[in-house]
Amino acid sequence: MKAIISDIHSNLEALVAVLADIEKHRVSEIYCLGDVVGYGPNPRECIDLVMNHCRVVLLGNHDQGAMFDPDGFNGSAERAILWTRGVLENGNENRTVREKRLEFLAQRPRSVKENDLLFVHGSARNPLNEYVFPEDQYNQRKMERIYALVDRYCFQGHTHVPGIFIEQMKDEPYLFVTPETFDYSCYLDERKTLINVGSVGQPRDGDPRACYVLLDGNRLTYRRVEYQIESTISKIYSIPDLDHFLGDRLREGK
Figure 1 (cartoon, rainbow, N blue to C red):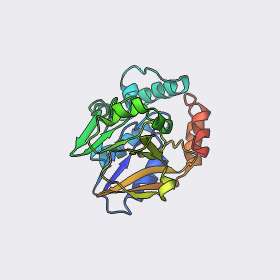
Figure 2 (cartoon, helix red, strand yellow):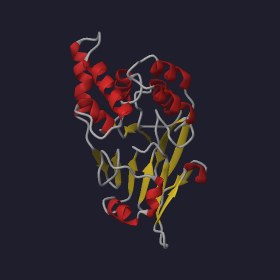
Figure 3 (cartoon, rainbow, N blue to C red):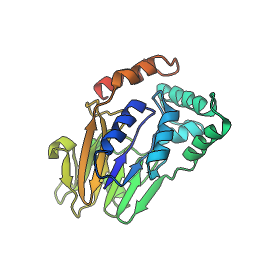
Figure 4 (cartoon, helix red, strand yellow):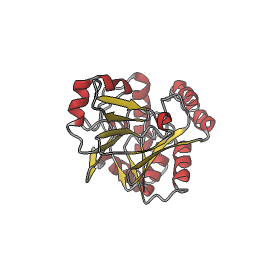
């Protein structure tokens, strides 16, 4: 059984809670689809946990931004990335520890393919930066081009909105389905399917609980995990370079 997580965004409390939940299941390997850092207050600790627990870790756009010049981010996100970079490059730890984290982020692949499973942060077409939003189910041209690059199943994050895109033989060939629709568990069939695993550290579907998925054969299960949100918010409030908005949004999952 695989656990697939994404978009941790330096939220240590959420990541610790998710890893504890994963331990309750027969998980043999954990895949992380990127954005380990950005927005949140604990980038170093989150990188360390991902390095120690995940077999596969992809590069997210915030991870890349923390390593190189951030491009295309709003002001709040860019300030958080620049603060994150400073935390990773400086501090009381020895140079070897700091360099190990930076090298780890710098060496992350943009995609990983295993048989008919594709793992990306954004999309099959643009693994790092392309958003595939629920409303894209109506953008047939965009979806056709993405689906053409998928053999069977593509696991992705980036939007922080969990759900699956299914091919249909109807007038509207693509359908986005939320986890609530199928009671958080379903069997993937022969159709090509895009699976957004949601976000561990900053959900945006109106549910503040951390989100990740389990894959057992072709059975897909979404897990929602409560964590100490107020503790994370307090840390964000205490860091001048992190906007209070980044903490406030955690309460509402937006």
